[in-house]
Image 1 (cartoon, helix red, strand yellow):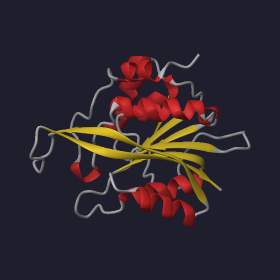
Image 2 (cartoon, helix red, strand yellow):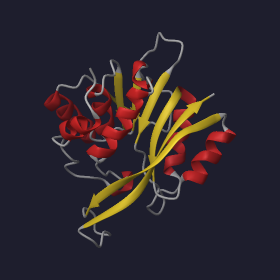
Image 3 (cartoon, helix red, strand yellow):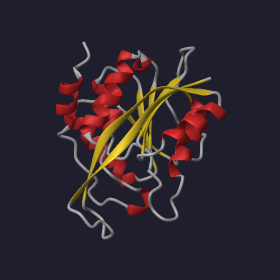
Image 4 (cartoon, rainbow, N blue to C red):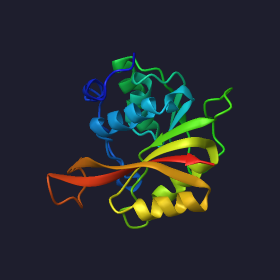
Amino acid sequence: MAPSRRTLARELESLADFSDPDPDLEQYLTPPEVAAHVCHLAGLQSDLERPVIDLGTGTGMLAVAASLAGADRIAGIDVDPDALATAAENAARVGADVDWVRGDVTRPPFCSPESDADDGLTVVSNPPFGAQHGNRHADREFLETARSIAAVSYTIHNEGSQEFVESYADDEGGTVTHAFRAPFPIERRFEFHTAATETLEAEVFRIEWG
């Protein structure tokens, strides 16, 4: 039996953060509560019955959450080998079964879990918000990859992204079936941060791709 959303969030609280986050990659820890909400919803929608792929897995928060929520086949992909090492340690800490793959998720094809099912893959992802100069629209590239490989995707975006995400999905034959806001606390970790902690209102979208 899959754990409750609250139980799942508590299990995820033990996962380690980035040891040396890279501002260019916008490496921020996905909040356990957000990961639990996403993967609990995915379980309710039967989306964890498909192979799951976490694009830009970072510390592995979403991939580990998917495993703990009941997914059988999960892969986490990231370009940063140090992040993948942390993700592997996190998975071992809570007994999650995830395959870790080094690769650039914006440049498929790459290794992903093979599916013998007719209904394809489920993508989960907390892409860069594209908030830093030179990194604008980084989340669009992740959506493009999700569209190309997934039957269903769950992606986390910066506040104010709903019009963009819905428009992109509509243009590409997808449908946004669920959208909700989620508090996304960010602790001071880079020189350009001016507050000890800032909480963003992130937006999460479930998209069914045609």
